[in-house]
Length: 445
Ligand SMILES: [Zn+2]
Image 1 (tube, rainbow, N blue to C red):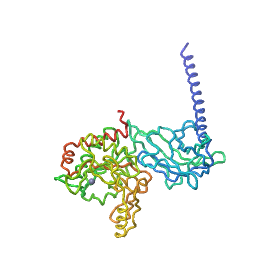
Image 2 (cartoon, rainbow, N blue to C red):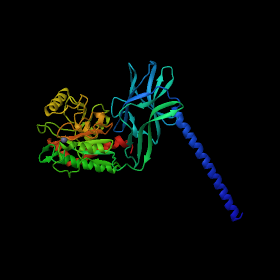
Image 3 (tube, protein in one colour):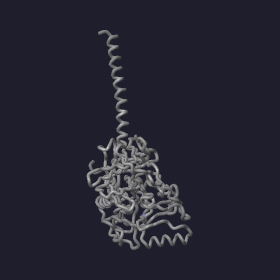
Image 4 (cartoon, rainbow, N blue to C red):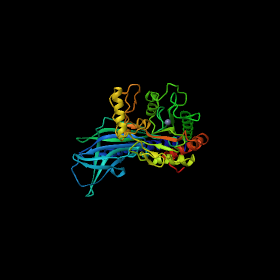
């Protein structure tokens, strides 16, 4: 065989390959279109109406209703449908029968619902699937009737990787029908955008606010020292961490400036992180009358992570659960403090006295502002600038919030606790970091 014949053969082969490739591409394109259409093939004419749509931490929470008169319902689930009905991921929905139909919701607990970290790269069409007693299933698409629009979510950094999720609403025209639907488009990204973080660490107090003081030590300083170490160790695990203050803040930084643009509330909101951990040292009127670890969490939460934070700190710092016995203690070292009836009255009276419209507070509203104001509407954030002298939480009406925990490591005015926090800081840091690592990365490595 001479060179020119060989060349001709090669060109022929390449051309054939090229043509085959084009045919394959065209075929797969049409198969894709077909599959996309299939997703809508079995959708009912009635649609579900979405009334609540919130991302809290890593979870998407939905609430809505369908106008169904049928009484023979066995089960309702949320279908995350990728390519036709056979390949769906399903999430159980809670539901109630009401006068106007069926009301459904993902969970009573704000840190449950659809785990966004669980979604692999794909396109998910979201439908409500109703299973009837006679064995039939019906799929209903979802129309957004909330005031909120699309959400852009970035997954937490794991193995140097992140996914970007666009949670969106759209309309599909099929024959003469208009179908409103919800979908999540998950794609891979090289890294987080500059202004997006995984975790926020918030050292309590700072600037002109020293926090509690005892034996020549100040809460603001000890909290900052510990927070910086937690940040460093989380970064060593690959997380992108934002700290709300770094010790360079001046005296003008105080309790009134936390709602300024560079105050901890808005710095946290702007971070688009999934978790925020505030680090504090406790104190009590009578020195040495109280000791131990307290973890504070917002109301309506699954508290397993709060329990793990408390347990890991007790274990690694060789300390104890707090002996503070109050009505809002829910477990060893775990406290969920909300406004009381008396507290709401006090807040209302203060507003009237100071001449501003009282805030909307219920007995479900978290008492500690860093737990409440960083969760947006999920946690009933309310600081909107109406109170003179205080700034505005720019994210108080947001349907995207951070899962928040406040850690009281121990009592600064308990000699044993103080001694331990001064000489065994690495134990507290290890406890906090271990709990976070297990929660986010799993304990399998
Ligand atoms: Zn404090």
